Image 1: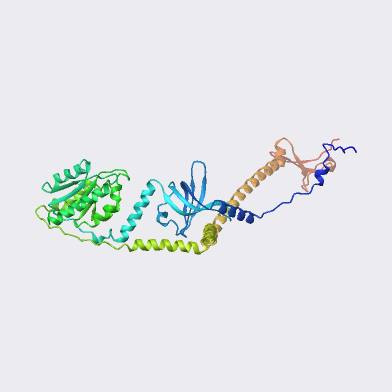
Image 2: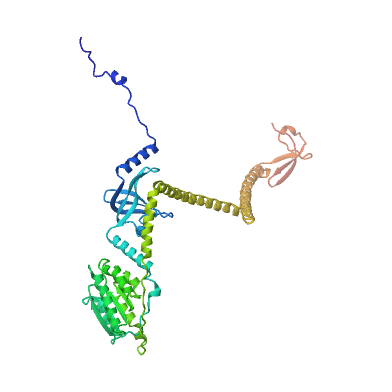
Length: 468
């Protein structure tokens, strides 16, 4: 049996094929499936990038994107997470974040729910600075009640700085100029680099020990160095130095860097000076004001605050972690984000409604002002003035038209008057008795008396005979 031949243009088999089954998603179902797939496959990730488009909501939540050279990702940082760095986050900050990759269903865009934030570079130093500042402030190291006034008339001061630094030269120059009899005890140490903070703290303790052994030998301690970068000045932001300054029995003056440099030692010290020269002027201020009067120095004793705040912070962190494990926080976070979006829309609609209401009020006031008696009388007065002008113009125009018609009629009358005809050599003949104008000679008879009117007068004559 021969095989049946088929043409290449025979599409019957294709038309007879069963249609392929299609699975149709709704937008919500598709978003939900993609969300589940992303969360299952990726989960929690670490991402490094630069913050852009940071928005702070009144609810305490933060929304931003992190980007690199070729792309960016939306992020949501909800209140209660990474609270120690939320206040210092800003656009352009380089960060390392840990969070859960998910999809925000209402807009169909994927984002990261941020759980942890670590700043990079200078930002990390700033966070470390803020943490230590908050800790020491909570313990009472910055309290004004622990600070003492500097002695007005110091006899001998201790200076902690580098012997080769410009700050020491500036301090000595000012002291030599303002109070040359002031004795200076120098404890030289490194003021930057690893271990510098420990050396400075040991120098402060050595001066205090010397004062305890030889009571009245020192009046105050000056911590100083010149300006530099944040890294160069970091030794003065270390906790070991801050506690040594706080524990000092002698008043401490902090004069590190320039006026714009604010350091931990500036908060702990009894007095902060903007520059080394300003510190020297501050120390010698009393002597310059009253050189003949010397006042004994006051001593101040400080006590350490308990470490309870740190323990409470750690307990709170553990409680938040347990609460995170026990509650359906993801749904709450999404609801909070949607609430923020709805709040933004509501604010926009309120502004639009207020604008429209203000416009309607302005229009109503304008129409109301137009209906006042003064405005009405003013409008009627202007209309009356306009009508009088129209009437005057109409009368003037009518008078000109009538005058032209009069002159035309007068000329016609003059042209057709008998006097004008007589002036051209004509005459008018009338019956003497009746005065009737005689226009034809057939009305006359012989002996008929007539009157002929000329330009210069009248002629009375009697018809003798009629011509043919």
